[in-house]
Length: 398
Image (cartoon, rainbow, N blue to C red; front, side, top):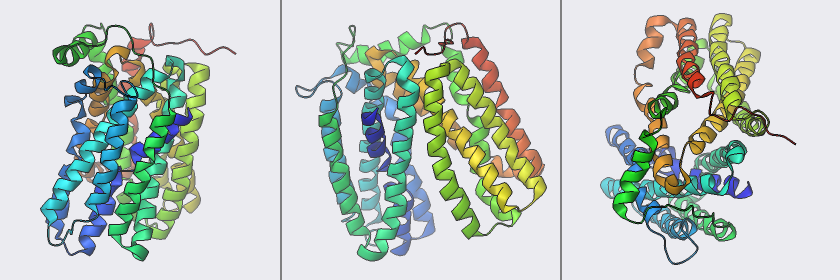
């Protein structure tokens, strides 16, 4: 469990170094907004990581085992790439910065493939929920450190040295990899690259509920995703100041999500994944409806604190169960490929479904928009009914 937490930290550490931190550096350097906007494309490796994931199911390096051997190499390369990104000038060479950032995201996505596979293979099915919650909390801590901490440090030492320090911090991830124990290799792992590419997909789509599993992954957090995409303009339209939003949403929100993830992981151990998915899914829907209540009440600071705390608690619990579900649906022989496929699919709603939410909010108004988002969560729960006969309904025993 400690390894799951620390690997989550190192997985989240690089994410915003090619996002908000890099955007701030480029804007400070005088790069135009159109170019900064195009830099969103450097995140494409996160959505296509299933394309090269089969390599890690097929090939094993002669040291440290099937997962840790690759992971140590990737973490060292990622540390160098992060530090190297800081030594390119965004003002004079923005496209060189783009190539360096693309290398960072490619290596970061590759690290995610290996960490997800390691966590799945090293934990029993019943432990996936708690492991996922610790991983997600570590991930958020890594993001917070490099985004908030990085921007604060940049005022004192400059962005170049921020990236150098983050590269050095990333290098310490190798110590966790060396400390971790290599998971057992399951019999029947691919012996050729063709097998590594074809067998994971063949095994998955031969399952009776394969299409329903994919549909569930697309739908389970869709309402939560749609609502969260529009919360910032909602807060501002309601009349809250940026200080109030920052203090409540970021401070209370962060710790509520952390607590929600931990509580969710522990409840999964007691209830099982199936019951937890139902409970947390209903809470997610109710918390989304809470924004409609806040829109009706108006700008109440106490109301904002309550709604944000409830939403982040339920989101943390829902994410823990959701990640645990995806892990439990992977075959241990091809964990890297199947988990990369499912996690890439999970990211689709963030891109496609979020696009029309602004138009929906304008058309429906804030109250009806959030009620609509709460209702959109229901189809995912209905799909869950199909899994009842095989998705571990029994609670854990003492």
